[in-house]
Every structure is written in C-alpha cells, then in structure tokens.
Image (tube, rainbow, N blue to C red; front, side):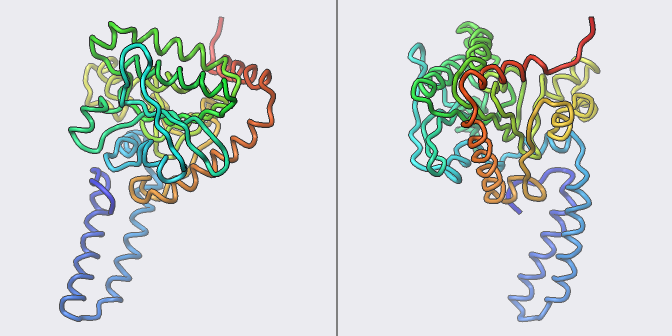
Length: 318
C-alpha cells in the first residue's frame, strides 16, 4: 500500500499485512503458500470493492486530503515536459503555494498553474499548506495574461483547503486579488481547463477556477466551505463534519449531476495515492481531449460561452 492508512481502510491494511507476512514466511522457510496467498488476494480484492465502491462524502474528503496524494508538481513531472517555472507577482514576492510555468503537453504548449502542498512539515510551512497569499493569485493572473498575449492555452490544477487566512494576507488584499482573478479569467481569450485534483476549498480554489471546462478527479471535493467549517457554524461542533460533507454535495458525482463540473476523471481503486500512473494517464487524456475541442472555438464564442456557463450556475426564485 502507498501511504498512510485512513480509518475506513483498516480491514484492507490488515489483509495487505497478512499477505505480506505470508510471502515473507514462504520465502524465509521455503514453504509453498501460493494457495493460501491466492485466497487472501481474492479476499483483499473483494474487500477493496466493498469499501471503495461505496465511499460516502466524508470518506472522499479524507482521500482528497491524503498526504501521499499526487500534487501539481507530481502531475507536471508525469504528464508534461520542458517545464519552466515562472515566479513572482512583480509587486511583493513569490508565493510557493501556487506553481506557475510553461510546459509541453506532448506537442501542445500550455501555461500550467496549480496549488502546491508540501510532503513534510518544513515544506508545508514553506508552501503555507497549499493556501495561497494574494501575491500567489496576482502571480497566476500575470502569467495568465502572458499566456493570452501569446495565445497559449491555460490549465489550472486546484488543490487547496482555502486561501491563506492570516492578517498579512488580508492587509495585502486577499479578497480583492481573488475577486480580480474571477473578473479577468472570465474575459481571457484563450482556452482554460480547470481540474480539481484534491481539495477545492472556497474562494481559494475559485481564484484560479474560472474555466471553459471544469473537471474533477474522482475522489476530490469542491466546496464553498470545508465540512468542518460548515459543521462549526451549523452545529457548533466540528465533529459533525461527516453530516456537513453529505449535505454540502461536494463530491464529483454530486457536482456533475447539478452541472457545476463537466467531467469526472477516474482514479485507481482506493484513490490516486495508491498508484500515480493510471490517474496521470487519465488526466492527460482528458486534457488533450478538451484542449482539442476548445481550440476549435473562436475567441469571441469562447468568452461568451464561459460567461454564460458561470452565470447559469445555481437555482433561484424571485
């Protein structure tokens, strides 16, 4: 198994450990245990389907937050070439919580922009746990406009619990930076593909989330507020996060049904953290397909369709 186990994965982990012990015993004692190992492997596969085919919203949130889940830089390495990272907003500093740069997707030049978390405490502190400051959003917009100038398609990867909530970020215009990005992304005259690869939290996600095609990995989530935040407001107790997750309709399946997203990208059984390559292949296939489709649309229709897409989200009554 790849990575730290989640609570609901305990029966799977125990079975995987049993299989590993049987293999080691068989090798050390030179005993043929192939039949027993085969039976355990069949039980393991059945167990995986029983658990992972019936995940609830809160369990998917946990998978989306898995510390071994692939992040933006992992996908860049797996599916892109010739990546050149670009830095800074030209006003304050570079923000490591948002990665930006030029890359090649096979023969297609793209501008890639994505949230980036850390793998350990030191890197997470450096990258603010994937929560951008206003200069991160300004850097992203500066490079989006550069891409528009040279007619380069834009791809964004969303994976953040939310924008950085510190006093300094607020003093430097956090809300204004996000609002400005929403306004300007709606007008960019190049194709924009947005993919939620993990957490899609609040305005921190939406700050790079206005696009022509909105896709989600199967076990990611996209929400106006975290389940814990919602539970703290409605029940005054973060322990009610599982109920909040279910009520918020934040899973890919729920959001596809109500028209918030356009496509679900499949993950290997158990989540992307268990095997990077299949999900990277599926992501690349989706990007190439959507880019090919969007490049056939005129600049005027691209902008008009994008504006109409976001204006039509939601149900209201007068």
